Image (tube, rainbow, N blue to C red; front, side, top):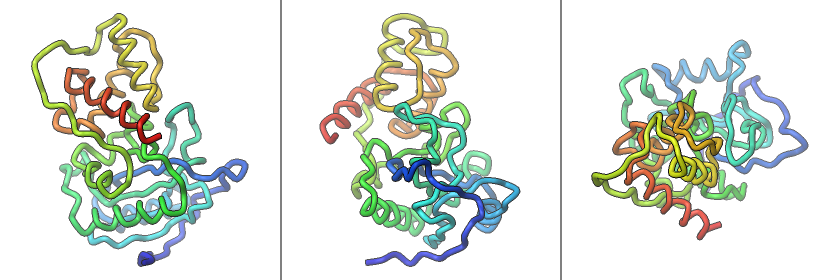
Length: 247
C-alpha cells in the first residue's frame, strides 16, 4: 500500500556525488515551535537547509526533496569513516519542539507515520540496520535529536534499525571525563567499531563524553549523563554482538 505523501519541494538540494545511492537513514527533530515554521525554514533558500521528508504531529508526511537528490540536513558529521553524510543519506525531519521546547512526546499518529515512512524507504534502499541513525549519532558534539524520548525500540520491532535491551543499572566501576588508560581506549575502540566518529586516544576527553552521551540517547536513554557506567558498556557490547550477527 502506497503512503499518502504531500509535496512541498525545497530549493535546497544538489546532486549526490558520483551517483551515490543512499545507505544511511537519518532521523531528526525539527526543534521549532510549529510544523509550519519548520517547513518554511526547510524551504527557505536563505536557510540552506532541507530534508527529504517532514512528518507532522498528526502523521502528515510531506516530501521536500526527492530521494535521488542530496538534501542538506546533516551538516558536519561522521559515521563509519563517512564524512559526507548528506551525500549518502535520506533525512527525515520529525516535527517536535525538542530540548529547547520542553521535550514534548511524539504522538502516536506521528510515530505510526514515521514507522511507515521508514519501512517504505527501506523497501527501496538496502540500508543496514546499524545505519539507521539519529542526528546526534553522526554529530554528537553538536546535536541531540531526535532525543532520548524517541522510541527507537518501536522502530526496531518494525524492522527499522537496531536495538538491544539496555543492561539494567548496577553499582560498579565507571569511566568518566578525565580518566585515562586501556579501558578508555577499549571503550573508544568499541564505539568506533559500531560507527561513531571517535579517535582511540586512551583518554576520556570532551569528544568521548559527547559520543557516550549520543550512544546513551539512542541505546540507553534511561540515564543520559556521558558517564560510561557498567550498564552503558554492557549495552554497547551487546549491540556490537547483535550488529555482527545480523550483518
